[in-house]
Length: 206
Image 1 (cartoon, helix red, strand yellow):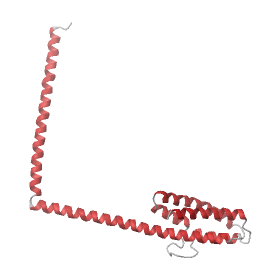
Image 2 (cartoon, rainbow, N blue to C red):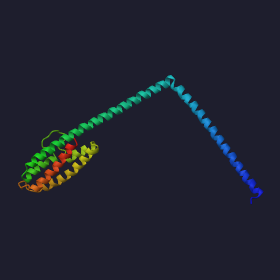
Image 3 (cartoon, helix red, strand yellow):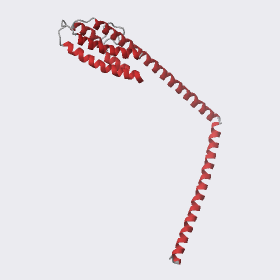
Image 4 (tube, rainbow, N blue to C red):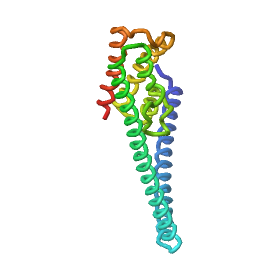
């Protein structure tokens, strides 16, 4: 059972909590009113400044400079996209031409030397179309295309690079053989199949 002293202590504590809550609520309300009043004064000052000659000049400068910067950014993005498209087409044309030449020569290859000549197109253009790309390998061209491409075209470029790795291994194995050696049917078929795979992906990327 609570003694009178404890009851009085509890009552005092409850009274203190009630008074404290009222004070906090009052302070919050006062602070809110002060903030609103300050915001109103600030808005009035800003509005007055913006309506002044200096304010109007400042706003005009910001709008004009901001608009100019936006236009320059749009123009830059457009030029970058157009340049990327042009580069992409150049790489594709070079790749397509080399692959076609390789196919043509491989189908007629009978000796190891013939296959070597045909596969040399992987490393250098045999029939130059673009002087800046003459000495670029197909892997290098596809890597450049990969950097410009997006989506499925990017995946095709990646797959083509992997196939070219296989072709380069085959070409390397031929280098140690005598040119006059007969190119057996299975070797020829394997090389042509890989080159045809690149052609199929290349045509699909157009």
